[in-house]
Length: 161
Picture (cartoon, rainbow, N blue to C red):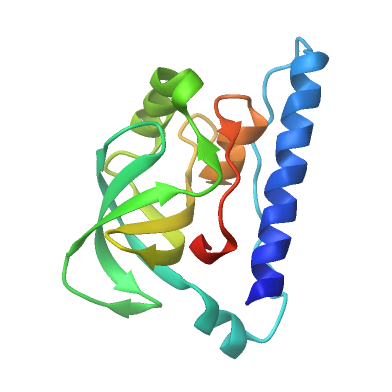
């Protein structure tokens, strides 16, 4: 579990470096949409025990890094529609709260998403997969917000993910 958390931290760190480079060398190109091809990368039995996978419909956007979902599946098993407060991991939206919240409102509200992460207290800290409406492509929301300079990277404890 620690190795997977370490890999996640390294990836988010690399994305933040890339975002900083974009700030130093802005281009006139439109931001690129990050898509993710999901390929098997390890033993599914082990990986399935590391994190919770929850599917649900986004019912509220609380701020630029927090959403509320109505869960309909946990690890592929259908459940009743309980609600869950989800905080996006590695995100600091304080400098650009309005733009981050608007992105979440435009792309996630009333849409079905997959959240992958862990529960700590009353919050579920997660990476969120959703659909970018303009292109229709599946995106990793945390990564998209970072790579497009909408939010800044916020270090987090590996215990959160």
